[in-house]
Amino acid sequence: MNKAELIEALANETEMSKAAAGRAVAALVDIITKTVAKKQDVQLIGFGTFKAAKRAARKGKNPRTGEPLKIAAATVPKFTAGAAFKAAVNKKK
Image (cartoon, rainbow, N blue to C red):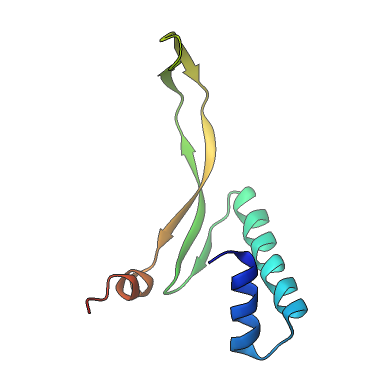
């Protein structure tokens, strides 16, 4: 499902216009992005948690030349699925 399909599904589920659903999806993504960028967690009980995680500096290798190179430390976004979400995805038929 892409963003347009998500907006259409939200509009159908909530009986709102596609334009309003598009604004709601855009606002949600923007809020989550800004909050995680501030290194704060966004926890949606039953769905999951979005958070910022630190990735340590490490050594890598240029695949073309084989030369070693340094990969800098970085802060990356991380999503951890909640129990209800995991159970829904893992449901056996």
